[in-house]
Amino acid sequence: MANINSFDYWMEQLANRTEGTKVHYARYLRKFCEWVAKNPDELIEMQKATRNHTEDLRENRVLEGKVRAFMKHLEDEGKSISTRKLAYSGILSFFELNLYPLDMHPQDRPNGEARGSRIPEKQEIVRMVNAAKSRMYRAAILALKDSGLRISDLVQLRWSDIEDLGEGFWGWKVLTRKRKVQATPFVGPETTEALKLLNRKSERVFPINAHSLSNAMVQIISATGLKDLSAHGLRKFFNVELQAARVPREWRYQMMGKKTGAYDENRLTKLFAAYREAYNNLRVYGAGVNAEVEKLKKSLEELRAENQELRQRLNGYTLSNDQVAELLRRIEKLEKQAQKQK
Image (cartoon, rainbow, N blue to C red):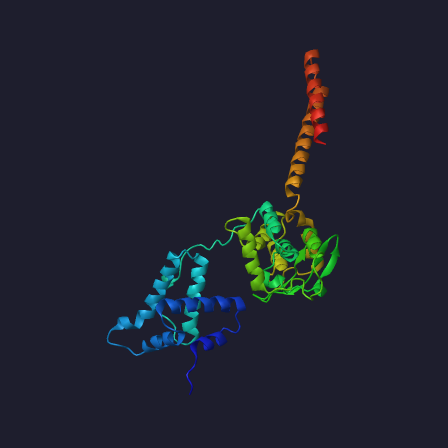
């Protein structure tokens, strides 16, 4: 029987995993191989030899020790906890699926909280859009913040998939690539205006693969000088802004392509009504102006309330001439302030 190529065999066993997962697993296995100066077949041969109980039992745990040391090496290089966990899972997967699993302990797994990229502020998203060098990249940034989709799902969008919902809102259906979830995403006027400027020669709205668009996003964010941001932060932005607008968690998840229960709301009309009502939270242009207008409105209401209170006091009490004159002066002052607020 011909020798089995351990790497190819592993890739075949990972057939039901996403392409992204397979790429990342393969990358870190190769890094581990370079670090220990062994190829994948040699690693399996080393592990296979541990099944032959030697006189020195320590020889049965050589590879486990090297994996622990490699994790420390990645930490010393400044790799994030998410990266180290991914590398650890990939290496263990290689041995497990080749039927020669490593005997690791729970405490060997890299520990720490994976916070990932932070949530961008609205003005930071505008800076990202301004730093983009093409209409397609600008539209992609706005679409990601409006829909909450992953890049891998956004690039699937075709012009024929889009349903015009009116007033600058578009919606469509998409089967997510990572979790195979039937999502119901929407985008609002800020995005649709940018999408209308794109070239329609291609059937796909974004004629680019997910890897290339992801790399472009890294370069755009780098050009802004913003720290701790990534394209995934736009997905977080979508979620927290709709949460602030009181859109139910399951509805948000349905829109952005995260798993929900079998009985959760998935009717486009219901979801869209909630999205449209909450859209102002997702706007990044004029957000500061809108906030100032709301502040002025609140101040005006407070002035009106105080004015009304003073008038009631004036009508309800017998006051001296001096007190009446003072109250009238205060009322006149408040009314002038209210007029300026308008």
